[in-house]
Length: 122
Image (cartoon, rainbow, N blue to C red; front, top):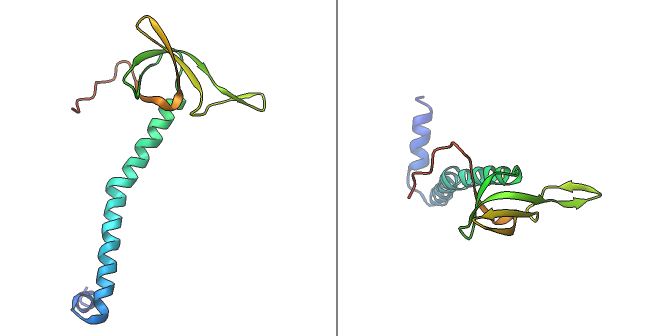
């Protein structure tokens, strides 16, 4: 501990060659803070949303990016080599009121889980 403290003071002492190192260190720390508080949580949220959207099934209630709330009636998955493959280009038919709307899987903004507490965020 006694060896590390003088070394730390020597790094913090103002000098011409130390200024560039301090500036690079400061920008590096700012990037690390941004990564852990902004980029990483956003990536986790995107992955969770993607898994919820790809695991849709008939009867699930969804909200589209346009604000239409409806129930999933039919899912037409794209085919690759004769087998159905889930992708964001799949066509999903939802029933909203008395009408049916065909949308792409990528335009689903939120999957409403029955019994889950509603978002209290405004």
